[in-house]
Image 1 (cartoon, one colour):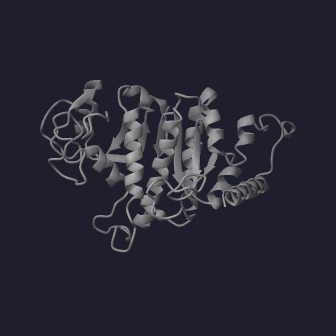
Image 2: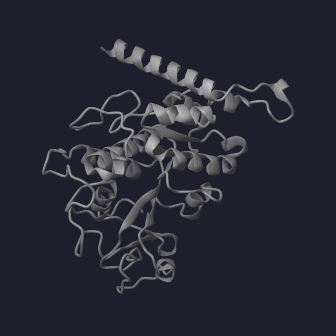
Length: 321
């Protein structure tokens, strides 16, 4: 069964590479000034393996990725085309798009954009993460509108983070609707003591900038020391350093999402249903140290962990966020 699965994966990779080559005829150095393909671009005309990515990204250097399917193809191209020029030079190969279906993979390969093939709720070998209740599936529809599928997307995202951390690479994941406009390594450099960096849902820039120790809180902006509630993190942009604390958070995040049953009536519902579990809710439950959302969770009152209050301890009092 393993050999058959490996043969099927190899056949799919070959078919995708052939489709990409047909969509974008290969250029050569003789095609004219500036039209020759670099070695990296040439390699990006085929699917990458996890070993390929690790060969490109040295230990200790961050890998940047997003996860998408063909329903988000335009956004996926935009994500990659904006990030690529920011990673020129020695970091040029430090990015990839994790494609959930063959149609998107074909499109990305045709543009010579680095592509890793993954399954929904699994890794690229087709093996489901621990505690997963369902096998991986290929999906081309808008998975954001079905919580069970959206949660499976979160499992895939977290599983990639766990893999990179175990390989000693910092992992920086941003949703496909994000656009990098400046050097992304600056995020890691700004808060060097943090295990995990996350965005927030704060919409008040003044309150978000003020990380002084105080109990008063602007709703959605309670990420400062002394805050008693409303520290709600956004998982649209996340950076994990390869520390034991970050790995434990990423592993718990993946496994908790994968353990949700997805049976009718148990978080298998359309967008907007009450109490549905997705990646952001699960992340915040873990960081807060409680399965509930509200006041009185173990994370409160927030305690400073460094960098002038911009880094705080989570509810375990071990991880620095």
